[in-house]
Length: 182
Image 1 (cartoon, one colour):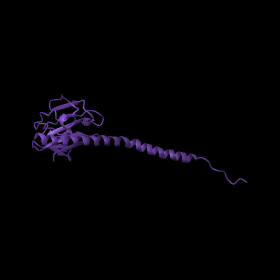
Image 2 (cartoon, one colour; image 1 turned 180 degrees about the vertical axis):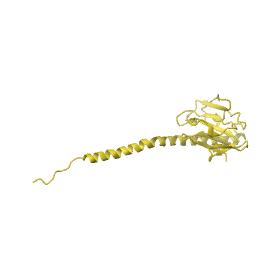
Image 3 (spheres, one colour; image 1 turned 120 degrees about the horizontal axis):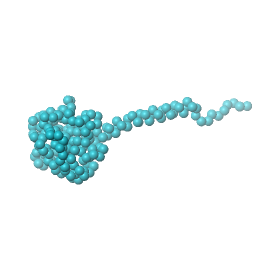
Image 4 (tube, helix red, strand yellow; image 1 turned 90 degrees about the vertical axis):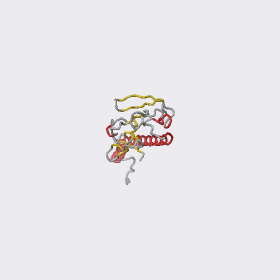
């Protein structure tokens, strides 16, 4: 007498259900991964700006002045080499008539953006705000003397005080990370 059969294996419905759940998990990871990577790169940029701001404070303590002129005409070319990354070599370039840029070569990982590109250092002219920068330039760190950050408007505020300054860079989320001495 046969009472019943033993069931072996999975039904097609069970297999499809498991594959659907695995597909949803894969899809969630696939969607979340780029945002997570972008967030990690932006976190490194924030840490780099904080480190540069700390170097500016150290420079001020040692030299009793900013490493970049209040008139926005000059940057102490040795600032990065002496206070941020001693493996860098200095090179001045020009980008238009209103912004001086400073490139450094041979830098170690201390002065590189998250993708490994060495940061370029720029001075924001006194009549410009940081919200007007190229939104895809993630390899620059900007200084502005006589200004402070205005996070509510996404621009700098001129204070007119020679010892005020800000240090900022662009984030990938189309925002600016700005640190000042206030």
